[in-house]
Length: 192
Image (cartoon, rainbow, N blue to C red; front, side, top):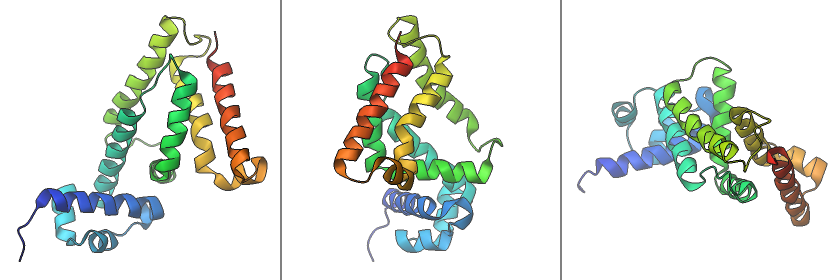
């Protein structure tokens, strides 16, 4: 029998949980499927991560931290930031799926680990506010509202691919045109 590696087991559980929650949401996810995919027993999942809701919160928190590190808000290059954000979500669609499942599950109720989420978004809002203070981004729209609008513009194409295909078209030139349109809309939204 090989030596146990708790960190490798946690990593396998985490990746299996990402896939399970992205596919089935919080209510539909099954710990037994996560355990089977991770080649771990259910008791280890509970020992390492707590209950299913806590595991979901940890998964989402880590995925959001990865996004924040990979694609920091850049008020000096909104078009480039939008490009990087769209690329990130195209490569990692599970994060937006997790966020939408969270929205379906919790609605506007308080979230587990909400104070951590508030800090996460506060840093992004602060970056936009700094851009406003320096005059590179409009201050006609409050920074928090602006972040919400910009992320909605950049993310919606991944969230509703069927609507994108029906309205815009499903060929590569259609996607390229839409990206240019999203970037132009972001530029106009943030212009001084």
